[in-house]
Image (tube, rainbow, N blue to C red; front, top):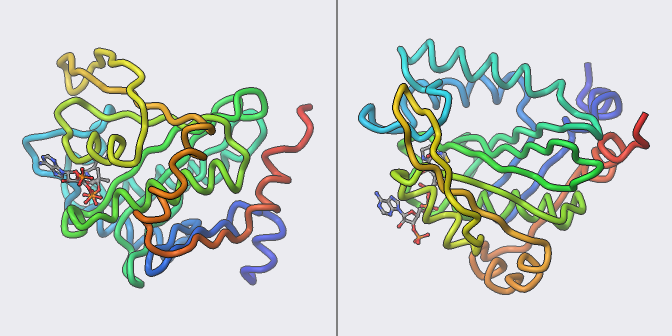
Length: 227
Ligand SMILES: CC(C)(COP(=O)(O)OP(=O)(O)OC[C@H]1O[C@@H](n2cnc3c(N)ncnc32)[C@H](O)[C@@H]1OP(=O)(O)O)[C@@H](O)C(=O)NCCC(=O)NCCS
């Protein structure tokens, strides 16, 4: 099937966000295999766990397979009640990780929750900050969100630093069960007003204008009148 036909049938597959050499785009099967292999090579050292569900434990093939299953399941979840938009992160032509947006009760709340990961070999070069700003651009400018949330375990300095650096406000902390023990999880919040106020800072952080593709058709899917 041609890409155009798929986009007509499933508009989420046409969503792209680009700025300079960084791109977020819908994860087709070819990109999925590349990202699964990236995850299999490692996302964090074994002595930490940045995720509530410890999907990164296991052999490289087990981790890769878990990425494939998760992403296939995510693809189907596009409706005004709830959407999951998982986008592959491509830096300078290389697939490096995933930036996801999840919106529960989207039609009512217009709120997204972001989550992300990068392959270990691609971390610490500022990609995490830039991809988060691109996700927020998509949410606020492209989709009309009024609020974006994120969160990270207190012992995940990189993820906490990304949220702080991008300008989120603290939204408290909760204790969460993680691998059989209680762990503190920080919540962060960005309102639409704050996003607007930080425009110049985000433009400087990105260093290049943002192009959105396929967003109108995707909005028709998630903003359809509630049944
Ligand atoms: C979280 C993640 C997406 C961030 O991406 P990244 O490209 O590594 O992050 P960046 O290089 O853009 O920036 C990281 C920030 O963390 C800081 N940082 C990174 N490692 C750190 C450490 N060990 N201690 C303190 N600060 C650290 C950097 O200095 C930078 O801070 P700044 O923005 O104030 O300058 C990435 O590290 C990752 O995938 N980690 C494993 C999976 C994960 O934690 N996912 C998120 C789950 S909530």
